[in-house]
Each structure stands twice: as C-alpha cells, then as structure tokens.
Amino acid sequence: MKKTILLFLLPVGLVFMFTRCTDDEPLPGLGSPFTIDYGEKVQLTDGLSIRFEEVTTDSRCPCEAECITAGQIGVKLKITTNDTELLKLFTLAGYDDLEGAVTKTRFDGYLIELKDVLPYPCNGQPDKPEDYKVEVLVK
Image (cartoon, rainbow, N blue to C red):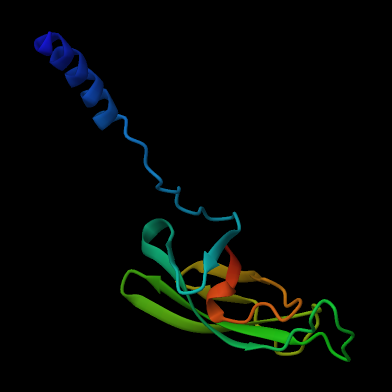
C-alpha cells in the first residue's frame, strides 16, 4: 500500500515541480507605457534599466482646491544602459505649455518620456515618497 501511494505521489510531485507557478512579470516592452514605483528599478531590453530615484518637488494644485497656477512635479530617474548612467530630472505641469518643463530625454539611442506621476494630490495625499509612481514610455 505504501509503495502504491509513493508511486502515485512521485509523478504528481514531479509534475508540480516542473510546472510551478511563477510570479515573474514580463519585462516592459519598448513602445508601451509602464509604471515604476518609488525606489523601484525596472529592467527593459538590451541592458536598459530605469530606476525611480526621487520626487524633488510636488506643487501641483490639489484636486479639491482652486489655484492660480496648476503647479508642477519634479522627479529624478536613473537611466542605465550597459556601463553608461544618466540621472535625469523630469518635470510635469498641470498644463502642456509650461516653459522649461522636461518630459522627454534621449539617451543611448532611446527616447524616454515621463507620461504621468501618480497619485495626483487630493485630500492631502500623497504624503510620503513611497506613495508615488511614475508612468514612463520608452521608444
């Protein structure tokens, strides 16, 4: 009886071992927006990686307020390819024509664009850096 159970469990165990579930997410691809949490590093293709380093400023007008200006948010992203590294400050505004806003950069043949920074400030949120995430597009 014990041999029968063992002979049954051994193949079942092998099946589970070779078909184990993984929580690995696919790598973000070029041309599709993806999000990066604060402090997270995302590995893309060909040795390109982007790390969300810092929120330098967030003066965006909160959703429940009426402000004279829309404000802006500044974030630093560390972009790395092979042995080359760039620490870049990006800025987004509440409107498209903010003079001096930097939403895109070219680096080592890639165009990196900051699409959005979330969450948008409402009811005093976000209140700590770990709450932020950026939406990035790489072409």
